[in-house]
Image (cartoon, rainbow, N blue to C red):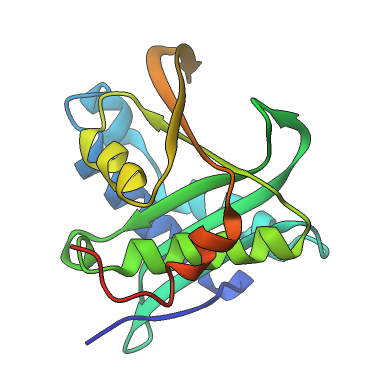
Length: 183
């Protein structure tokens, strides 16, 4: 069954947190310490997502993909307070359960975020990815993102390298949500 995409509500916080934590544990195993991944808390993540999704109207948007009422993925974006590397909005998260990856769901989620941020006035969208996450990098490249920078950064006391990708044509990126499936 093809997942439906809809705007997330505060009621989705726990499901979003579950998808996020499980995705981190599978995607970043071997790139981040196992103890860090194993210690991730769905409850703590849910509390954070409740705050994000319950905030007053703002320029952040989160969409969920669901099948039979179950959230199987999500994507989130926001307008930046100040432009970074020439981009005024950020794709802050895209996570799917393994079963729904490589079927066009991530592309549809990213397209919805791009359209929403464009409606908020965005002219460019930036996304950060752990440099060693080759599948995610390939995903963004297939969607037409340009590699902007690779740089060291610190996450919760861990020294990592991140890659920044960006899109300047949000209309084209948003249109990918209506295009035939990419494989």
